[in-house]
Length: 176
Image (cartoon, rainbow, N blue to C red; front, side, top):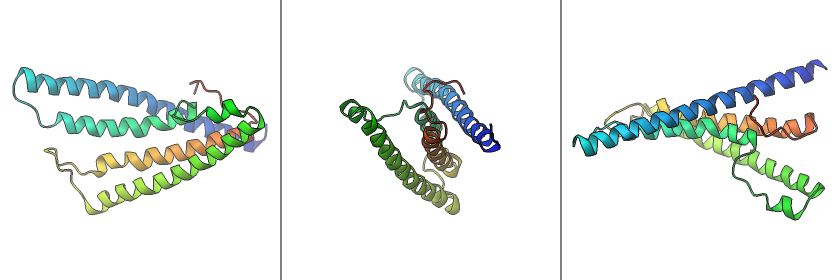
């Protein structure tokens, strides 16, 4: 095995392990969101004194869940996609359609990264504070957007590269 192949395998596996870790963390965040939501319902309807923090905290945590878990879904091939062309045109046409789809996905992710970076940078550079009772700087949450979009972009490039470097599709199983 050449040094380039070793470097490729290590880099790919590290990114995929990071994706797996972030997906697991997202699962725990969903549990935390559920518990905080239950607390908010309890204080509002049982105690009659609604809290002011549970809804915005759940919304912020949901942002982390979405941006942390999507690159793992992309890596595993379980994201939303259209498989209709693969059914209609098996064989080489499927590979061409998949490649075109991968290129379009990469273009979309690069534009998406650019847009979320602008949102984050504007909030960070102006010191914008959220409008809730929490009055937190929005950059505390918004950093997850360019981080997650960038990780999705890198993951998409790795999935494409694996098809050509390894000569096969990545296994769609979570063994990272």
